[in-house]
Length: 171
Image 1 (cartoon, rainbow, N blue to C red):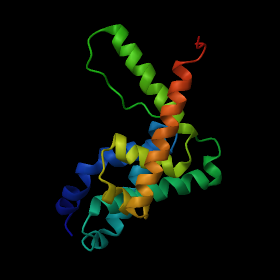
Image 2 (tube, one colour):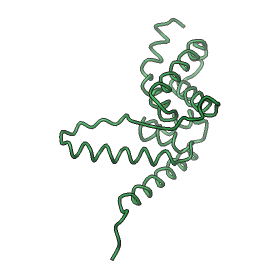
Image 3 (cartoon, rainbow, N blue to C red):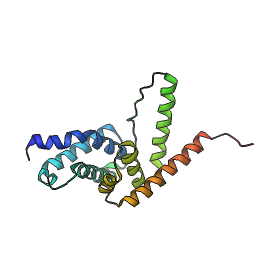
Image 4 (cartoon, rainbow, N blue to C red):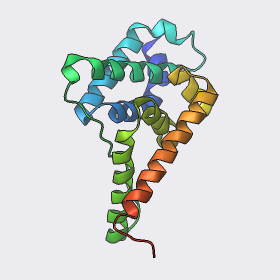
């Protein structure tokens, strides 16, 4: 595989790899390092990429596994999850602040989810992957993906309701 062919495959997905890495790891720097490591592994195994029908799913799986390994390593004892990909096109300052607060609240709630549900929610609702693609990345069947996604969404919804209804009493 030539360099141009390799770049044609991996460059369109670099942002998705980064966002997944950032969802799992702590910071911009950690996520960039993870994506660089994955690119290096992909380059070293570039002949393997040809064997996969969906190189994007293969790269996402590598990214997920690398990031999870980093979290389990001793180096990562102080890593937590953060996410700041949201950008609003709304012109009103109040609306921008409210939207940012709401999105921030959702991402804070996502931190409480079990790891598997958190990654599935990221892939489906943020990255907009199809169930079959998520199943390939997570190495699970589609039914399990749907169940985990449903549970994750339910937990996020319940926590949002609690936060928005805090201090309100029913008469």
